[in-house]
Length: 153
Image (cartoon, rainbow, N blue to C red; front, side, top):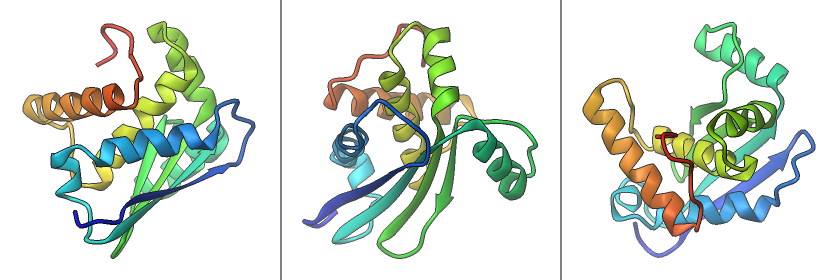
């Protein structure tokens, strides 16, 4: 990616006790990984992140993916320099953080990176794809100083 980097716009549609700057930092650090940077558009790329609730994620999942259930993160591809939009359910992130015994901000970081990787074309349908996505997620989180619980990925 040419000089310019990644700009991240964060909207909190629900009360989230994590600063928007945290999400921005995590995604900007993820964008510095060579494999990730190589998939970003030239110049300054943008991504929008909406932190919201279960009801909105369920509606979006139903309307856009045909799944009538709550999910943790959804990715919506953008065009040109706008890589796309992420919608993350804060209540689901909190529940998952409890299940994996790490902090909610850790789960939020993981979901944001996961969503960004999807926007850039990575998937986890096969074992090898999942391994690569997990490797990149771990690398991005490490760059951001975020440690996930053992067994989360």
